[in-house]
Amino acid sequence: MLLLQTIPTADAVSHGIQLAVAPVFLLSGVGVTLGVLANRLARIIDRARLVENRPVEDNLEQVKEELARLQSRARLIHRAITLFVSAALLICLLIAGFFLTVLIDFNLGAIQAGLFTLAMLCLIGGYLHLLREIFLAVHTLKFAPRVKG
Image (cartoon, rainbow, N blue to C red; front, side, top):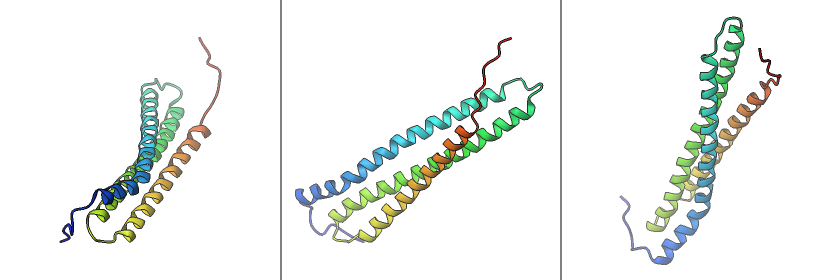
């Protein structure tokens, strides 16, 4: 079991805080992106509920197609959210690792590099899923005038 070798000085704690500042900014960016993803998922769900409640007398196939597209989009956003939350957790572990490095005499450099790399891979995967979902959303757009009557 690793114990505190000495009580960390104010300079050591200050250095730990300096190390943690960049990942904290990264974490705030991930949080903002999670808000965007949650909003997109909510809009997809709202649209699906609207389509589900539509009368389907003559356009059952259109309704089924649109619901299938919405389900695909929701699945992509769900995966993106999972990847972004995973990245956030890895970044939190990275920040905790910086403070552990300051508090105990143990080099966590390889672990920290691994955590950062995994976090970046999760972010890349999350952004790729978001990009794919946006592509599907734009690709399935159909602009047509509304006919009253």
